[in-house]
Length: 177
Ligand SMILES: [Zn+2]
Image 1 (cartoon, rainbow, N blue to C red):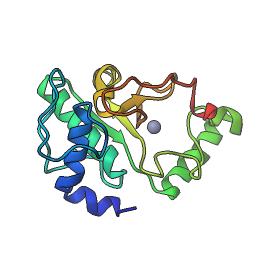
Image 2 (image 1 turned 90 degrees about the horizontal axis):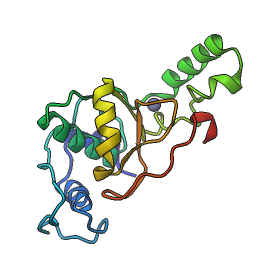
Image 3 (image 1 turned 60 degrees about the vertical axis):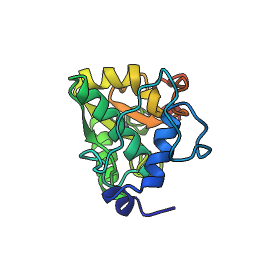
Image 4 (image 1 turned 45 degrees about the vertical axis):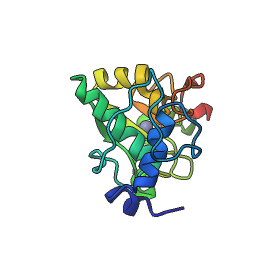
């Protein structure tokens, strides 16, 4: 595993090219960097600067989100990351705060998971704002492999499918993982 923070500060051309190729519907890793975009699939320009809030995320998620956000902004849709990578300590504090709010671990798990289970701690989730941007992502994010995963969290997205293919069915909430 490469260091996410290091990879994010300067996305490599190879990684970006793989993701761009994937966004055209080609098989991951099978396309040369010079492959022409497949017809019918809009491919956003490659970025040299990751979107704000992507620090610490899995590099592929950071790039996928960055490309999606660029396309959203190009269409005039507001979008930003409300919460991306979280340290185990930050997630622990949220979990304990949730326990105070919801009373039981069972109810708390519907909204926040302990650090050893949260995909934010592994850098594999982004919470998106505002609602308009999240709705756009829900409708379009699969171009980059991004999917809403929980019925009760319109803001939470993960890399959950191959770019250009359909998203898997959502689960009711985080407790159903
Ligand atoms: Zn989330």
